[in-house]
Length: 286
Ligand SMILES: Nc1ncnc2c1ncn2[C@@H]1O[C@H](COP(=O)(O)OP(=O)(O)OP(=O)(O)O)[C@@H](O)[C@H]1O
Ligand SMILES: [Mg+2]
Image (tube, rainbow, N blue to C red):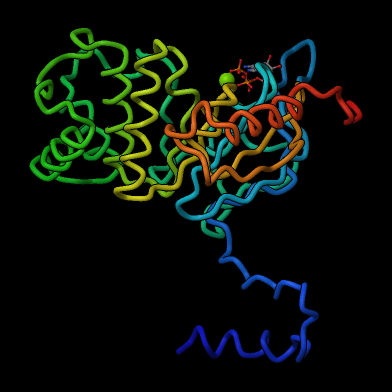
């Protein structure tokens, strides 16, 4: 009822008859879950100031699999850290569900590339349960239950009582993903989570991530410098320029998944993204 009432004035302002080839204005999208508006990020060292990202504008919507694609050093990790609340922008704003991001919080969890992101003295189930207790305030029993359920989802039930050093790199990344998913963050931030894996495991992890996404539709902000990975994992891709990172283009990638690899359409999309990534800098350096 409310929605209809809200839409009425919009409909009333539309011209009564549209030309045949004109597409009606799309219904307004809901407000983005995560809005990055005019954000510049810098590192200050005693000798100099390094601008890592320059005036970035991005809107990430609920259940997006939003990919940041760009060359090494273009500021992808820095942008992710800013969304996580570890770094404050020198200009611009980052808002999550309308509220400015002012620091880290359990509504934004990061999965890193490194395999050593799990405390080695905790078992798999303890690793997943610990942040649930500390950051989400669950009691021991409920935290363990939730942890076990999520570990099951990533296929590691048989290793719940193993320690990280007893797991392969891919398994450790599954634990890191389970730990993040169990927290049910508003946005799951993933910084090249599969980059250190061998090609086969990487492929399998991409597949598993998509299956997990299908199940609970978390909002992902996923960093990679692999064009193929961006197309497979993402539904939207922001192409960033080399250092300092600026948004060069935003591309839809809904139609691709792992089954598209090698298809003509996929190869054409790879070529287009490749051209955008490697085109000579049109942007003036700051
Ligand atoms: N702690 C720091 N102090 C000073 N400069 C930094 C720091 N961390 C990163 N930088 C610089 O900021 C820029 C962006 O770095 P960032 O790590 O965000 O790049 P990236 O796109 O994630 O690269 P990669 O793909 O290699 O991970 C780089 O020029 C880097 O040298
Ligand atoms: Mg990085």
